[in-house]
Picture: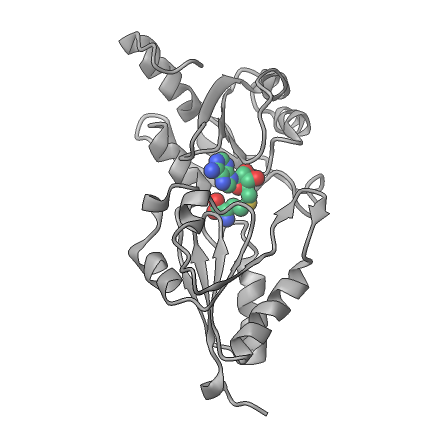
Length: 256
Ligand code: SAH
């Protein structure tokens, strides 16, 4: 039986929303030292290009309703690779602890006595906000921001009341497929049908798109614009800022 000194280690690395220069220095160092990289499908090509040629890459990418590798097997894989003495990087889109199931992987490593650390990444919400000049909080518009998963266990039963509305920004991850149901849920909770919404597709990546409308039109917007994953939905007054700014300056560089 090995003791933990013989083990390699696992580093959960946040790969950010896509652009390689949004990685942290610590993430780049962890990648350079990796023997094994276990990655998912959200990691952008620019970031993947930084993986050393000597490292073994294992793709455990998951897509909605088509889970290629179940979560418990990913945990077991990380543990087994570390126990074999490797420096394992678990490369995840955005931040490992924002809808990244990083908590489960940390638990699996701890239960097996494998040393594990986490390198934070820029979550999609932060990447989108910066890239589109869409502040998530703003002295005049919002002093509360919430991140929710639009597709998760027990969504229908979840109480979102109070998460969106005056002075608040709601950022919905994984919400595009259920955009209509999400809008209905928010309006049933009393949110005004004319609350501003923004949908950000492929934030910080090539082909990034921002489209804006009003809550009652959210499903129509997603449909008309053929929005595809990965995309975020942002609800609240800040969602109207980029369009208002563009109109004020009569900018024609972005089409809303
Ligand atoms: N851990 C990730 C989130 C994983 S959940 C993070 O912190 O960003 C996957 C969801 O994240 C996608 O369905 C989408 O809603 C969002 N997402 C990830 N990358 C994105 C991007 N570049 N642009 C817009 N949304 C993105």
